[in-house]
Image (cartoon, rainbow, N blue to C red):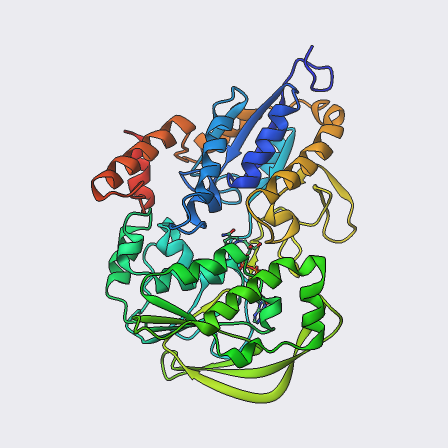
Length: 460
Ligand code: NAP
């Protein structure tokens, strides 16, 4: 007798999205010891989601999470189904009919909008686009970033903004032995960017960078991190925040910002300037971006709840390149409830609920950024996935009561729709080919950046 509801039928689970939360959901299901068959579906022919396509190329340690995922992938219960888009190659409703349970772990794939005039001008980009481009994501392969401008502006002060600014600031020598895509390295080699402004709407005590990431700016060879010391004068509420236990990380940030303020001009090629209390209100330019207009802000509110309020005073910055890095947003999957306001799938502790009534929809679960919004580090997704899988495990008896064709049903639909799906052994061929291509250049891998190249490599 199996542990899946006293039936010898394995519980069939489809997981949509093979990033960290997809793998941690798989791990939690396997660790539970139930009789389970897992199909981990991804729209790309490659697994690992943001660990492959989001983590910055110069952060190889963060990519070590992949070693854990590789081990999970060796389990008998696991099956990878790459190059399959739910909502295009198979409908969400069809997946519900083939599997006892579906867990959506598809992350937050797009950026939040600023909602200001000029946002769509040429030269104004989302951080997602730039990150996807330098990481060799096939959807962003053909984008062009005009790096011939002297000034670039990054809006937002989170770790993604830090990644974008760092990649703009580093020299090619500092990047050439990473897994950065070759097309990005080639473009960055002739970059004329000399000043990078990283702009926050609140103050230095509220910046969301983690200290480790912020400190890295002190170590970049040919870029001086800088802050006007006046900008480090804090209001009394911010000082209270720094003294509180929850403000420890921000206190460390302030110490690092002080080092930026004290840094001497030694003639480095680039300067990365952090500046605060400014909200972009308009992007301007004829045909393309020429300048950004900011409104200066004051902070008001209780400690840790201070918000930015416009003062009516404005300032302008000429720039030809701008990146909006103000947080990610989920993308709805047709047939799956979605909360537009939050950019997440509505759920109760991982059980998906309907949009209007909030009633639990049997057999549907969610984990990761699409469940709770884009926050936390890679490991945060493990606890999040465990919570969702625990909810699923409580429901097992009801779930297995219904006959479902599982994997065979999924494959039958994909075959009917003429979809070339990729299993894990085929992914391993792509992986091996990428590693082999990177080796002569001293890179950990040279990623394939076109779908057809990946599919050809999968065939070996
Ligand atoms: P984030 O940490 O939430 O930062 C978003 C930034 O955008 C904040 O500075 C926020 O300011 C600002 N912002 C939001 N709306 C704005 C608006 N309308 N106008 C101006 N500024 C606005 O998001 P993220 O940088 O995208 O990172 C997402 C998650 O991934 C985070 O948990 C991050 O730590 C993680 N991550 C980690 C690493 C790493 O570990 N190395 C790397 C990349 C990402 P307010 O504070 O005022 O809202």
